[in-house]
Length: 463
Image (cartoon, rainbow, N blue to C red; front, side, top):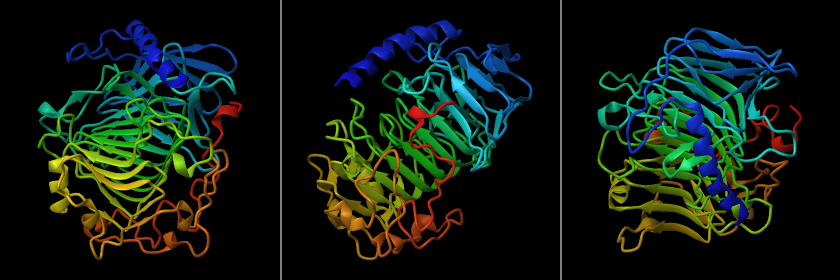
């Protein structure tokens, strides 16, 4: 389809653009030379907007009385804190693919409110915005990961490492992000060289992240590379590729998460809700990728209004390459396949209870549960183990939700009498005190926590 062809063309154009704005980038696995700490170059470009370039080695504040335009890769260096006031609007330059990178040892303090969310968005006018108009937001921390040597350079070209090397700190603090929207980010330069909407590289559990909406990302909405950061109340809206992608030893906890697919848009590599790998080769490198998700709702292409689904949509959950992802109280709705456990090591993780799915429902997926060809693993018997509270239903309407979902005005709270309003399971890995032990399954009970701060039509919002 045309959009997929456009994405391929973007990779060539963006790659040339980024070569002009970075001093050095990865080439055949080489590590880029770190940028030199300095101060932001701030230029008043009119229309009450400051253009921001370069890197900052001391504390700085983006104030809400101006708009801020990110030009190229914009770095916050080790020891510095970038504060962003509630209600501030930050735009990414389209030509240079403006990107904000919080380096190891740096912090972001972006504390919006429900009434005054902080917005990262495209610098294009309303009606002309598109996937991948700018880079995105990247946080790099000092926590554990399973990369060789305990550190790696972040994907997508920035001169920034993640991971603590030989001295990791899983409690590392990269700051706070609350009530933040990230709109029209995400660029795929080439396979495994992407900037996602929100990239979290070895970010530690001392970091606070909640109430985040990533919309129209040109790659994954969220991707974690190692780390132990915990998140609550997050939204992946109309992303091109995966909703939540976990890799390289990520071990954080996430509760109350929503993923909504646009039926017309999917990546040529295959778009999933969850995609999870221990690492690219599926090795036994430790720490293992072992996130714990609870209270997640996936609205796949069959659960959303918007026409015939793109054929590149694949699975609500693709757990592969020795990942030990755990999903509790999760609704997998409207994908061609519900859950795919991919590979012998992943199946062994499931049999050993390192990988658990409890209290969850697969709904409206033509193929609910799958393994790869040649597997002898009985995924149906495993998923339906007595006491785990899992189920498969044929019709999405049986969930007691307003479906098909209207993307610009989604009704997210279950109807009275919905089976989702009870049956939650917080045993096993989900007994961790991080999790609020609610009765409901899926992202929502009787309260819509997206009200007031989420934007379901950013294409037509005047900023």
